[in-house]
Length: 152
Image 1: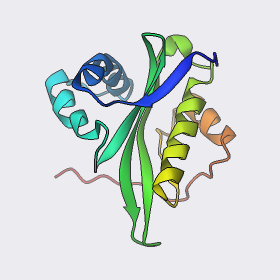
Image 2 (image 1 turned 90 degrees about the vertical axis):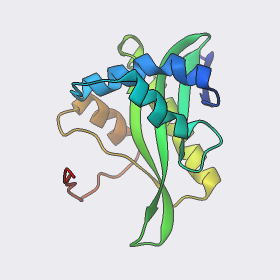
Image 3 (image 1 turned 180 degrees about the vertical axis):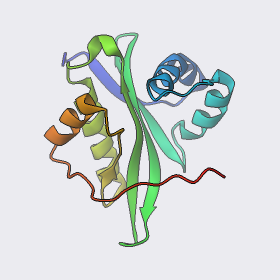
């Protein structure tokens, strides 16, 4: 990955506005049918730093957005500790395999350590093999948990 890549938290509405197309691309990758910029703007604004809810880290090379990670401050009641959930990790297709995803994971792990969190955790789709190869290479352990969703 080039030395010119900068990873930093989003702090302004203008930065969030520039990120909205990537958020939409991430959602379309996971087959969201009704990508809505207004809804995304309102939802993701809660993660502008500083925030009690989480943080969005963006990777840039100059003015070019390369990717982002959205972190949620999270908890484990079984261990009675704070964790950090990396809910979204997205790298624009044109720069994949250049180390941007790993740099975002590393930055997310650093933020987690700085918060005193027990761990950084994330999930991916079972068929997202490319992401799984990256995740497996980080030293992270695959969870044995099975996730469920109940629509309410």
